[in-house]
Image 1 (cartoon, rainbow, N blue to C red):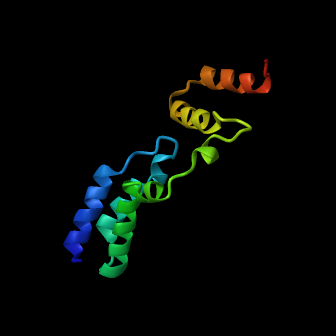
Image 2: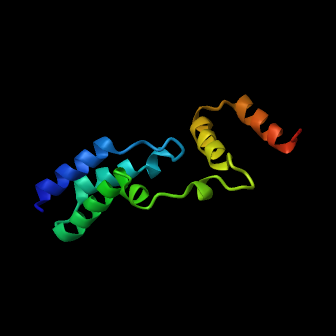
Length: 112
């Protein structure tokens, strides 16, 4: 691929890549893509492989090709574990100080 094609692919990936709300801005994958667009060397073969790998990650190709079994995703010891984990990851960035304190105190005391 030519340098212009590689740059166009990096720009498209930059536009499509989701923002990770848990990671600091300077550690985002978008920063790496921006750097690649501006300072990338002319080694087309390696960059082609990187672009292809990024597209595969973006499309979740591996998770569709090798889906996790229901038994693995819902262990007998705690069937709701991964659903609760995903919900927690979604809630964390928007949680206030008081919400974090409440969650911490709630984790210390468990009532059943």
